[in-house]
Length: 217
Ligand SMILES: NC(=O)c1ccc[n+]([C@@H]2O[C@H](COP(=O)([O-])OP(=O)(O)OC[C@H]3O[C@@H](n4cnc5c(N)ncnc54)[C@H](O)[C@@H]3O)[C@@H](O)[C@H]2O)c1
Image (tube, rainbow, N blue to C red; front, top):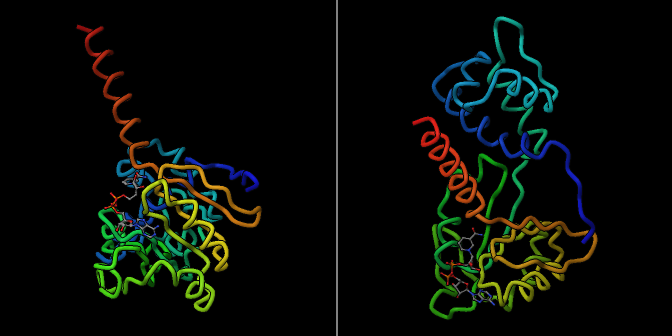
C-alpha cells in the first residue's frame, strides 16, 4: 500500500470532538458558538481553535463566533461524512460487538450494515440489529452490496486473510483493530487503530506531571 500522507493530522483527529460538542449544542437549540467556549471545551488555546476550524473553510465572525449549523456542515463535508459510508465488520466478538452497539457512528458518517464471523453460534444471529453472516460469504456479499469500507476485529493471526477477502470483494478502506500490519494493493487504504495509543499518551502525561510536581516540592 502506498503511504498516504495527510497534512494536519492532529487537527483532523480533533474534528470529531468539535463535531460532538457542536451537535450537542445544536440539539440544545444553540445557533452560535464563541471561540472561547470551544477553547474551554477542547482545553486548547483560541488560536489553535481558529486554525483547526479554518481547515474546513469556515471562519468565525470576530466578536461573535461561529454559526453552529454551518460549522457542523463544513466539518462533515471536509471529512466526507455528509453521506454515510456503508461498512461491514468482521469479528463479532467483544470489540466487534461493542462497535456494532455504538449508535454514534452514524453521526460520524459510518453505517455498519452487516457483521461476519466464523463462530457457528454467532452466524445467523443478530447483534445490535445487524445480521452476522458466515465469513465465507464476505467476498460475495461485499461485492454484491458494493460496500467500500471494512472493519477488522478478528485475532491478529486471521487479519490478513480477512483483509484479502475484503479486497477481493472490492473494499477500498480498512479500519484495522487487529494489532498487525496488513499487506494490501496500492488502491486500498488501511488505518490501524490502537486504543492503547491514547493510554500511552495519558501515562506519559501523568509521569511528567507528577515528576514536575515532585520537583516543585
Ligand atoms: N486496536 C485496539 O485498540 C484493540 C482493542 C481491543 C481488541 N483489539 C483486537 O481486536 C481483535 C478482537 O478482539 P476481541 O477482544 O473482540 O476478541 P474476541 O475473541 O472477543 O472476538 C474475536 C471474534 O473474531 C471471530 N473470528 C476469529 N477468526 C475469524 C475469522 N477468520 N473470520 C471471522 N471472524 C473470526 C471470533 O469468532 C470472535 O467472534 C483482536 O485482534 C484484538 O487484539 C484491538
